[in-house]
Length: 183
Image (spheres, one colour):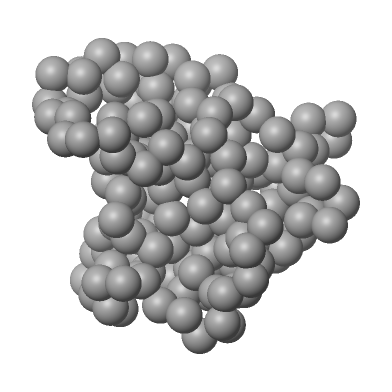
């Protein structure tokens, strides 16, 4: 664990720093365009994949998944599609970094791959993150609860969209994660 100043921003400045809140415009839900999916389906979203873009109202553009199973199915198809698009340059960053404060400040932990219930000293503590390189792994998911508590809701970051950017958690996700998953 490393301690950084609370106000430390990314090296590239604030142009790649984003605050993620719970206001989403779903482009697709379980693979169906938002026009095909109905309101009831959208109300049952359990995992949200946030894209680093917003609509004119400030809602984050996102894909929604009503279960972990539908998210995993999407990931497998999308991995195959992205394999031909990603050019690996050098070794890239191997891990996703999770920070105690916004703008990558404070103490941090990192994780390379797999699922991890956060240790008690990191439970409900993550305020910002920077993802691993898309050449290293595919995605990072923050889960609201531990695996023994049934995961709860999740917020999902595809590395090809978020690498080199900082995601700050707004009040509805700040200090809420109890588990992390890197695929």
